[in-house]
Amino acid sequence: MTDFLLTPADIEALWLTFKLASVVTLLLLVISTPLALWLSSGHSGSHRMGTHRLKGMVQAMIALPLVLPPTVLGFYLLIAFSPTSGPGQFLHGIGLGSLAFSFTGLVIASMIYSLPFVVQPLVNAFNAIGVRQTEAAATLGAGRWDTFRYITLPLARPGFITAGVLGFAHTVGEFGVVLMIGGNIAGETRVASVQIYDHVEALAYPQAHALSAILLVFSFAVLLWIYARRTGATGTSGAKGWL
Image (cartoon, rainbow, N blue to C red; front, side, top):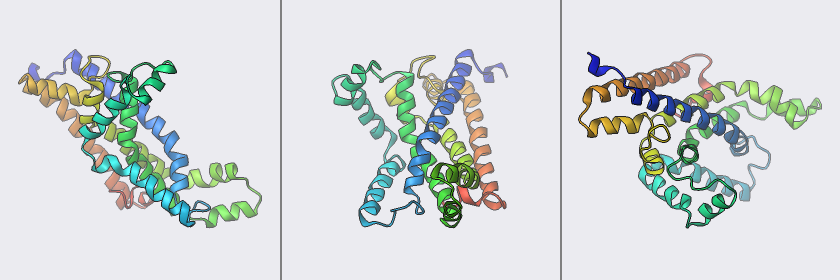
């Protein structure tokens, strides 16, 4: 029975995983909110031909992680983070140094990989609001910030919750991208999925079972919550059309 207990290295990997997921989710919610607002159909100017094409291109770029193998994305990010590349030289010039095999590099790579899982629920939530409420607020003299703060944000709250949960869960389950970018450095880049891989490579199946069971229960709980919201009265605006 003691073989199935978590080791200190397992606990450290779990802590690092949830730390990474928390940082990535918070940053993605901040970045994705204005992006999703611009991509939503209710945004002014969204029906112009040039804007429509630009939005289509941006949406395609955001959705790339959904169809690309994680190793492909990780490979090109690894090249971009290289000190010999243009982006790598720029990052080194502003004092960030090399992002490869670092926690900061993991954060950036995970943000790119989980971006569609945060943007799309927010777009769905903003689209569900429509323009009638915002136009009514404008006629009453409300500015854009007041309209967003008091009208859009409260109505889109279910979408924000769904986006946060999906982004967090997807980051927790990453493997290929984090292995390519972060490698396997204990306490720095060795997240739970990489730790499980190490256990399997070492034929330490009891330890692999223990970690895998935690991630399995977590993932199932997330999916159960999302599907419960879909069938409930309050869960239609954020998750509908996404899962």
